[in-house]
Image (cartoon, rainbow, N blue to C red; front, side, top):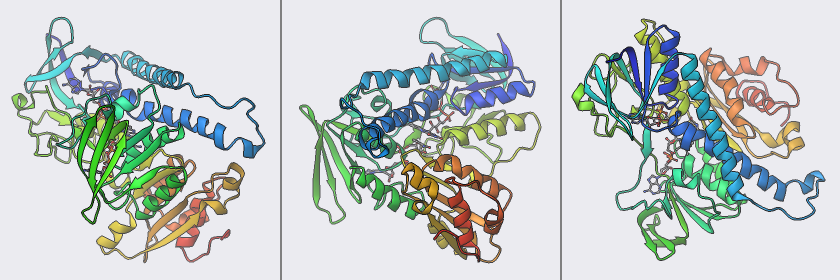
Length: 468
Ligand code: FAD
Ligand code: NAD
């Protein structure tokens, strides 16, 4: 029987990063993945394929709607080849997942394909799809088994017309009417992809705003822009039933006045969140406790109820984000190696990759009000920037929230072109406990979108922004 210092179950951004860090720190490491490709949800059916389709559909939309304004005429009309678009996405995924295999080899990590299940707290049985099962021994194990799409109890996902993000990413045709249940990250990113490709898109959301966990101003701005792009929204609607009627899907929902509203379309995307995945793990055989939300219970060191077993990523509490999973992977590897790593969960940025992008770090205005923190807000509209006018990306804003007394930045919220990349400046600033004035005093290249960060910081401090 092969024996390891550490075995990692699951090869998503949590698991593979944990395995690499363990190997770097001199531990003999194995990684076990149920599927034939590495990379988990993120690389196979999540972050990477969704961004590939967002980029492709953005090119398509620009070609139709924006090129003429730039003086570029497309003589013969524009033709969409959805099959080719999906094939390109698959190639991006394949190249990226192969990259993980390369990294495993480079770091001398043994990879096992099969379902990993505990026999006891130091033995894991690996059952491949074909062939013999084998058992390995591990002094420590890191569970990184991720999550699967959640649904509503009355919905039967048939994977044909009533689908999750996994099927929508490989659909191969443009729906006539895509109905999206859930106006969160997945619903908006993938809703925007198919809207750009020509589908009618209706987002049905239970709450009174989209992306309800982000700052309210971001919800409002993104909804305003997406409505201009042609996406319809039914907010404060509680879905009551989803039925397939011949070739159509019929959704019945109740609006906030209690009135029944019907929606009909050819596809229904269910994007109401994701649930932790522990099926087949036999967690109980190792004494690993799972809470009533299906998450593996962990302490502040991400250690489970069994001392030598840790858990990270989507399968434990916290934001279901790839970088959060990776941060936790590094944290656990370093903890096992006897180091004293640190994660500040308040400073994990959140991004929605629609266009305009939406990015956030720290506290929202609603949280500060709820916590009775006295704060000041500085805001700057993207449309006032020369860079925005040059590119035509005039939607959005930067909002910086700072402590009223100390001026320390407590939260930053951006909607706009390249917000996903811009938020990094504010994460660094907050990590170093910068004040809004610190940002206001730093030179920002001109013309860039990041000038809006400086202007918002100026607005939050006593000085006034220059370009309002
Ligand atoms: P996962 O990536 O889910 O990986 C878990 C792996 O464990 C899987 O490969 C699974 O097969 C394997 N596994 C499970 N059980 C076993 C077992 N018993 N034995 C062996 N293997 C097992 N996050 C972002 O930060 N940015 C984004 O842009 C983004 N976009 C997304 C888009 C979509 C459409 C979706 C669905 C998600 C997106 N996410 C994004 C979320 C992100 O994918 C997850 O937060 C991330 O993948 C979690 O990583 P993980 O390592 O915890 O688990
Ligand atoms: P989500 O939690 O982002 O959004 C779910 C939405 O569904 C919420 O707005 C919620 O109010 C709504 N909802 C819940 N029940 C409903 C009901 N009965 N009727 C109507 N609406 C209902 O979940 P998601 O969009 O499915 O994404 C799952 C996870 O994947 C998220 O945690 C997210 O962090 C992650 N993800 C991240 C990214 C990114 O970082 N860019 C992209 C995609 C997914």
